[in-house]
Image (cartoon, rainbow, N blue to C red; front, top):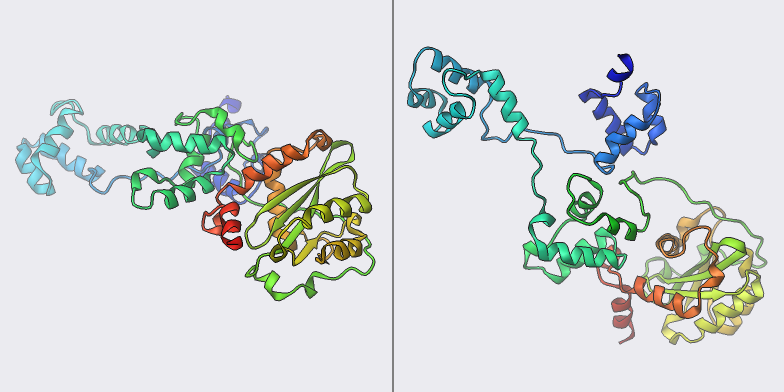
Length: 383
């Protein structure tokens, strides 16, 4: 009996559950905090809502209150007319008449039962924005299939249809339509196009570790020009290696001003190979896009002096364990895991394929660019 009882959560427990989830606690920790023997019950509550805390239920301001229903019940008992009852409540007679009829008529009306039924009726699911607008739903589904994030879709719609509110939707609504099972508005397969491929929304958090390397004559990021720091001038790049199975790698370069991305196939991680590949591609860039390169402290850039001689681009190195100093590149590497999951053998991908993936990223609108795309921003720079 106790086991069955413990599968349910009180309102207070559900509130605590969602608060802990929003603070970043895992399912197992939440289950322990709520004195649950296993985490399945907690997971079910989260999964039904897609990891999105439901909004607290409230009565509509115009809805009848319990004390008004009690006044209606007392009026019926003493034989008052519907008009007189309505007048005492400051309500329309039709409101009082409908309230009595939908709850069994004068002979069966009970205030507490009527109030309970009204609360139950109010909990029926309401059609969300995407369910009511087929054109908007089609565009959202199309962009999701292109691996655009909900936030990118929302920002793009605002730019594309500034005067048409019917063609705009918040990123939160898109997430809810994907994750909340009871909505069934967007096909569940579209969730596979999200970068993380999660089944639920999760609180932001976590850290990323960066490897160390002894670089001879490394120039610190602290000596990088101020124009690179404030992103005011194009031509300052951030770079890193994206790693895969069997010691395979892809070089990633992100331009700080436009967030334009280049992906380069590297046969191996040794510094001579990496520097040669980077130099070959960087030399093809216009002169105004060749100012500096900020790199991790990995040994693949040990021969950074050769790179600088070949390209006239100074290399600056991040502080140890400070990947946030190459924030644009770190963010891009996270996006790329949607196409190159951890454990993939990256040697299987041709440079032509890497170019297609880079193009797809460069044609995505970015929040940090006011939902312009990196490709559009770069084109503006080069005019």
